[in-house]
Amino acid sequence: MVIEAALLDSEGWFLTSTGTRTNFHIKEARCRCRECDLDLVDQRLVDVMQATRDVVGGPIHVTSWIRCPQHNARVGGAPRSTHVPQFWGGLNKAVDFSSRLMGVNELAIVAGRFLGPKGGISAYESRGFVHVDVRPTWAMW
Image (cartoon, rainbow, N blue to C red; front, side):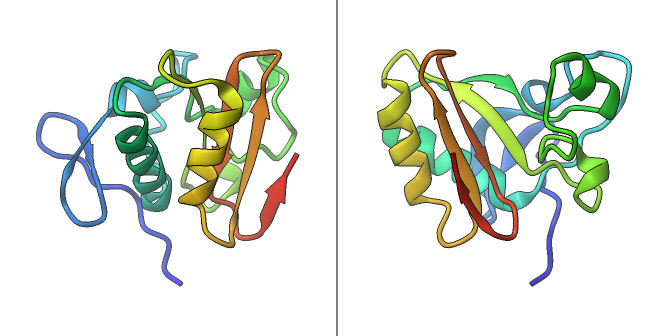
């Protein structure tokens, strides 16, 4: 399996693997540290996010997508977090998100339908967000 970086259109919007413009912009994906320039996202993750957004039928709020190692440490992320591209072949593989249109548990179920047999998912109900990643194995916590 070849892992590909997600494509962007000329205005910075992610494209699905079929070439359709998504509702997600590169600005939403960039590390919140504002110091690094990491911007490579796994195409499968973009496809999962857009499919989830299509089912939700409205906005998804991204709370964390790409993280550099320094920002990951500052926010208390896992030591080999799927948010950190350097640990996963140079591509970001995780996103944390929520939606006002759907509860966290329901949102996790919807997103999980698009992961297939490989990927990670968790509903952080007390913190109000879902974590989805496209790791090469299945994980749910």
